[in-house]
Length: 258
Ligand SMILES: NC(=O)c1ccc[n+]([C@@H]2O[C@H](COP(=O)([O-])OP(=O)(O)OC[C@H]3O[C@@H](n4cnc5c(N)ncnc54)[C@H](OP(=O)(O)O)[C@@H]3O)[C@@H](O)[C@H]2O)c1
Image (cartoon, rainbow, N blue to C red; front, side, top):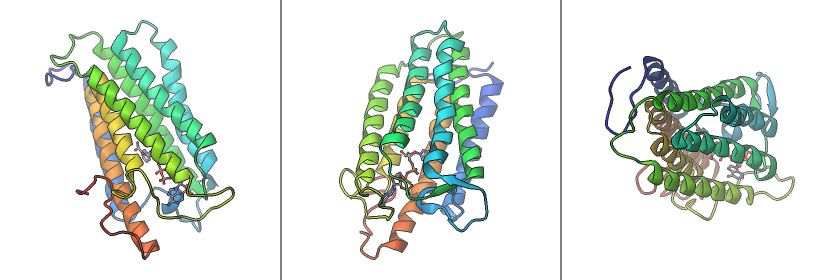
């Protein structure tokens, strides 16, 4: 075990290695998104691809359900949890459960996903969820960090999850029953950025990091941010290429900045 910064629990070499892999992996995929090599789902998928495809709804359920089950099962796998590990497990389980519910009852999908993207992302989500909970379990053996960020974390997580849901709801309202086309999104922060739902997702994971204060949750938040920077950049580029009247002043992810 090695010592670390005041706002983090100490980390093991396993958790440090997983943190590095996480940041390197997702920043690589974020970079690929910027280069135009996109994970194959939603508006950035290529329907003519020869790879194995499934419908978006099935694909998305395959992405989120294993991570939700990992979170849910952890309540029994680590029954002797303290308050902070309980909060982290609850936040992750709620996050993925909300996703599953949105896939079933909110989103209106138009296309499909390729199986290799699904396997990659699903493994990434479930492994990260398990590692984040495991890291929290290990941290229980150490002194609390000098600064306690739990309460701020709960607030950020709550704002993030609500903002993320609200923008998903606005996206779902763009399509009537059976409609499959794309429109320029309106309402909420859509006039500022093309991907406000990504921005609120980042806020959610900053919240999870503040609740958990482990190196792994910090790395997960950084790597999620790096990937979503790439994906939002590619999404804005897509809107500009498809809609002549797309407002150029609309940024990708962060109002007025990026
Ligand atoms: N943690 C991570 O690394 C990570 C990575 C990616 C996404 N996410 C999160 O997952 C959530 C969903 O992300 P996503 O990339 O799937 O979002 P998305 O591409 O914006 O799609 C969300 C839903 O809105 C529909 N939609 C999007 N733009 C539309 C438009 N202009 N007109 C009509 N319908 C539209 C999509 O339909 P179609 O499917 O037909 O396009 C889909 O049903 C987000 O909250 C995001 O933060 C997390």
